[in-house]
Length: 345
Image (cartoon, rainbow, N blue to C red):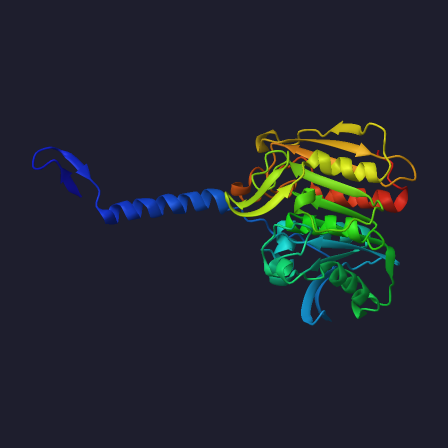
């Protein structure tokens, strides 16, 4: 420490070393507050995870498959797509293995594909990473993944249900799910996107087929990364921008109009299961017989997170809702498409 103003003046200033130590302590405290999450133990599961590789478009690519002990036949497939910078294995943890618990109960396959350099080549023109620069054919890759499952020894001779292939994704994975809905409606029987909205026309490279598929959107209206009301995506504050997106409501309106819905949506408010999490949830549903269902679940106060009954994601991405378990809602949505064409209950 050194004195300010000469001997006897009394004011003390910290040394450079002390300032650096103070800043380091503050940075550590911020990291702990923003990034630390309580440990969430893996639940008991009946099945097993197998890793598969395939050669596609000149690259060796991989995916994980969760095979429950009891698999129905023909077998539905749920593709679960990780976010930007994520991995197939991490997506299992980020979803708290919830899809695998559902698979144990329902008998479908859960597939976690791996994006090139931990990214998906989604519709956003503003994405600046190797998958986009190289124009990776991720639609073709995901088709190849499902085709690779046919005859896989892990299935014990059971057949894949080609009419029951679904895709659910978070963030960049949600944007990839939108790409499937727009460009490959023959491939997916429905998609679910969490913390993602359609890019604006100026920011889109996708070529929409004009054919509707069932779409579920789960977005938080306090998302610090993907703005609920539309605008520029900011993955790291004001840095690393990835172009503009439409609002969550405009995204739902696009898919509902594409499906031919002219009526007002059915609206529902979920019970506030955990008042301490700072969020509440509501749902809008467009569903008429013989038309693809479209749902928008809004997490009021929710951030760039995956809702779960217990698990919390890092605070730096905003609040995690415990009112609407995302995996359960997604599977119920997919299940309605299989059973009745999407009549809401």
